[in-house]
Length: 347
Ligand code: DAH
Image 1 (spheres, rainbow, N blue to C red):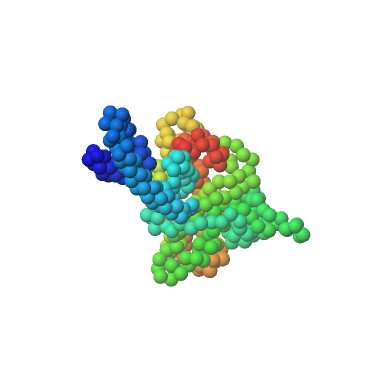
Image 2 (image 1 turned 135 degrees about the horizontal axis):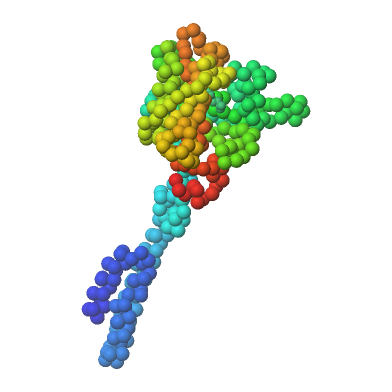
């Protein structure tokens, strides 16, 4: 009898260590007690049996109590928008396959971080814009032939057949807004310095190098006495930080309606550094034409209410997909929008 009383306290203590409290009722010690019954004096068997049942009932009560406690704590309201690890009450199985941030978004975070260190704030673009921001504010007057180069998706007004909204074909659509938003910086003798990494759209025929949906990063910098050397140095520094190595850069004259002078900006191949005649990134050229840039056209500043006789600025626009493809030697731009898990899981 004493043995039974002692076992009760041992088993009660053990319940707390079990993941499933009910398992205590299957403890081998209880079985052993039952096995003892036939060995006892028949007169004692009845009392002994009752004692064991008493022990089991005592355990059962405690188990039931524990179970209701567990159930209560499991019914804590579940925030389905919280990250999985916070809802630790969820079965483990659910947390096995978590999604990850898309590779382009991961790289965009790095771009924002690098430009952030250089004093640029990051702004978002939008996925539907108007003709004014796509063209007029960037010094493309109506009928300007360069408008056609942008393969811009547009909505058409049902009744009038007029073209109305545009899917931004470049992040330059944000220049006028950025200039207006941060104009007051100039009064405080601070520069306007912003980048806009976001989605852009063009009516392109798809191939390994062309996507209809892609990303660009726009940069805008305005202050007194800004000159082209600052543009080139800023871009070179940014690219060296992003690729983690020293790079050669060069500029060639180009044409954009919103910059004067305008440049096409090239860098030495960050992948082979010009050493591999069959490099799949630069095709053995050693140089890559990467982006467009220039000194902001005085009319673009004027349209944002900034006096171009006092302030000058530079701007640039760079394809992000291309930047990332060169970093990791990704051969096909379509992988990014393909939702191919084999591709995405590498990042
Ligand atoms: N928006 C141009 C494009 O997509 C790129 C560009 C060129 C942006 C020069 C700029 C710039 O800000 O100054 O082709």
